[in-house]
Image (cartoon, rainbow, N blue to C red; front, top):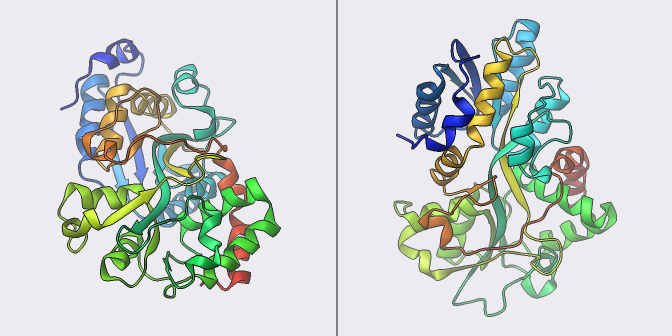
Length: 333
């Protein structure tokens, strides 16, 4: 069970220490249950969790309309929570605590959602075969890496968000040129998830891969067949360290537009922003806390510190439609 010392002051007032909060979550980690139990222990508020894929939950909340029991929507990509917000399923929240704790670029400008944990989407490479790995996302389009790159499909939400950031920084024309260059450097047609891209390095099918950090860190922690036993053969680069910083994304949560337990929902989000909850929530999936100053767990610390992009993540959603069009035009299937 979590240490609740830092929660005492925040949770001491009994004004809402009753009732329930209904959590619609597309984050599927059993270890999160201990976190929700800690919230109940601290507040007396029961957490009712309904799980599903993000698009399924968005469709469900839309169908339920004003009668939806959802209080909090939690998902694992800024692009996905943007979809929920665009569908009118989230409401603005004013919380001095959340505004003080969550950096501005990791939350909606008007409080519609807040980043709870972070992951970076970075470059991995074969230590033996690649002596000079790409140091930037732009380098992935360099012809010297022809036939070497493994990466997921253009319709994958993580890649849509990455493209959304490139559009925001470089513009649409440069983004299209980049996508065409990466396609020309594919080692194979996009297939599988992030772990499959890393396994492509192990198998020798590709020399360079793009993946979210926590997929690699699962291999570091052990137990990922084919990856863990070969983890030392893979190197990594946090891209764009001298310019924009590495692209980051978030698990994020917002209060549902028709939340029947609105105040409990806000307390739940505030709970997730405490140091103890941040450390637990992030580290259970080998991610990074959203709140500054929360220490890294042993496994994420193996990658070292890095400079992150401070682009407001709302841009990832705002550019999502155009990102898909650019991937399609580039032949990135």
